[in-house]
Image (cartoon, rainbow over all chains, first blue to last red; front, top):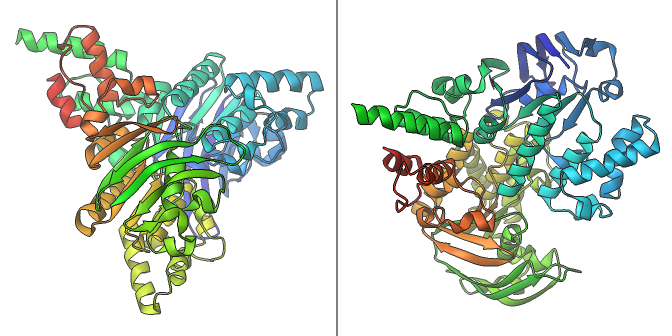
Length: 273
Length: 278
């Protein structure tokens, strides 16, 4: 589902101008990463997509709907939202009820709600905790629960604010796997993260924000190799690109396998010299 | 010196101990990194140092934790407040909710320590400057972004100048440059100020560059302990579930392809990686 923001501005009552004339179009089925310093406006931008915030100037559309004409409840059928802090979205008595809340609130029949809940529980591997109180879970499990609740909505658009926070190696791997699966199914995904290594592995497009502006936008390999621009947004290129740059390799590898093949070529060339 | 002596702790209604027979000495002024998979006991270790275990969480324990001569579990939280500072994993849970501005929030702990007004004001301005919060000093802590709230949480504890500073994933919501900055500040506190710093972190590259020592927790036990470049390059890490830096992963992959001799040890920093791959 296509998303557009046209000349969007937003200033908080505190006087902070979080978005300063944002123009952005996300294609249907795209998996884009939104990166940039704290307070750059990333979360403000994505809150525009499900109507939690409304543009003061400009226009936001979600699959052709102008968000000005739709309530947050209506937009929730199109845009699923994983909050940065899962505690802001969890309130039910059990893990199972938490996940079921979204789809049943959307008016789906009980059987469908149950099957979606079950599927989401299995996806995030929390089936064993289904009857526990969400607040008896560890913080990293609450993030996974919030993700499951978002997935159960089966929305065409997903906004994931820092999904890999607090996850260990296995958790990161699991979230990468979920992202790949959702991407394959054609969901439109906007990923906010400070973890550029994670973004490099997962996103095909990268958007860099600072001070309410977009500083760079393009393929992940291209954007993540623009060191000067990234530094302006308080982020560093991912480790593999930094290493490739240090070695003066001409490639911008995003994954280990890309690095290995670029490295093999680079070594051959060095030998010939 | 900080000591865990045969320390075992169980949360209420739990069968398995969260920490199991921990023996650990942390010299004054050491910058210690703590890593481990989710559920290994990292946060519990932080709580045990700050006395939240058992005073807040209750449960049952054996052995003890000592900060110098102070027996943590036998002391009140009030007695500990001047000695140990804990930065929570979730800043939202740490911020008092009783104050209107960031400046007042930082004052909260200092007032409770009973400092004189002039000293409180001096420390607030110093903490604001070190952490880079001057611009938002007069805003409500709850009107800030996640990363800014996390900075407030760190500043509030730094201002109290504890001898022992314990931080539970304090950079999880910070952008990479701010993360590096926090590591720099902690390093400086340990090196110059003699503060003992215990830091739980997943960001291995920064740990490798900044801390003096790393311990790895797994199922409530300390399973690896040593210099960061040695521990973080240990092939065991993968089995334990800690993950590795991209440098280590890339090095393992090129070794497999016989592009680099198998005997070479894994790099964990950019500098090491540069010499490994060149």
